[in-house]
Figure 1 (cartoon, one colour):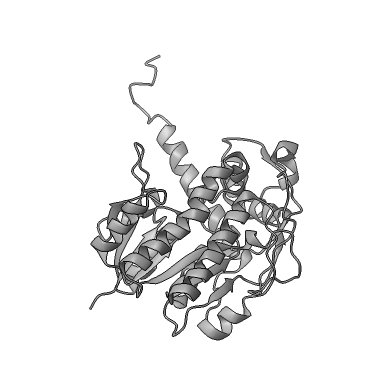
Figure 2: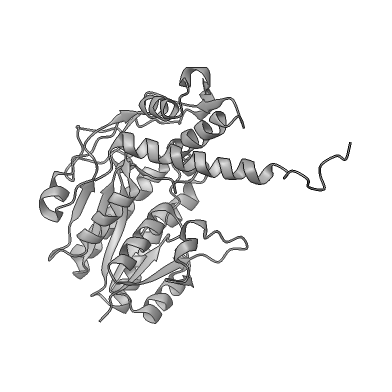
Length: 337
């Protein structure tokens, strides 16, 4: 029989890549979306005829239970969260409700509806925060430095707790930073590549950034969703770090992005102290040895390839924007002289 998967956060970067991947594996794919007056399905627009979308909310336990009963999924991927770290300082309570307690509501629905459902929780390298060792593995202690990191740590441990308490096949993927052309423009990587494209095409001239010295382990989101699926295909549930094992600074990302567009970043980048986080995570680098040995997973896209992919996608997008805004020759906006 065709396997069914339910994805929360399906309209996000990871949700879009995972949905496409699972469709390629022959799954019947369902997505959970919040009811909103302004719905955005841009990332999954090309998939909407192939997937089923359902309204439910991580803040509403009954809606999740009802959805589980209706779909009867074999696998659930919980990717939904308030996932923008700076916002978590501005909205710490909402971040906790979605990113921490939302996980509990998903697990509780599985416990009540069908404990045979396999569950994936999207954990985060931000849980390591002020790191105790490098690189970080599944055994590295957590020391989160943001409300988002704290909420993710709760979600991680409640997943472990339900696995051990109720014998639920529940896995946490401790994913390090993963990017793509589908990344939201509020994230620094996409902020950079979008600005590079606009500067290259003469739409703007400057880019304001915060801490250029922060180090991150960056990979390609399309590679990372494969690891999510692999975790749920194992004989036993467990937790895995998913990372490239290499770290680069924000400055490295900036230099590569501008160089790919034949620009000198120092002519365009300005440091804005307002963009410095209240408590900075200075460095993150993952040890994905367990994922490599147990799952057989490894990343395919390198850091330079990732940066170039994102710049090229934004250049194409901005060119189309500029072309659409430019009046066509002979249109009624032209002067007859």
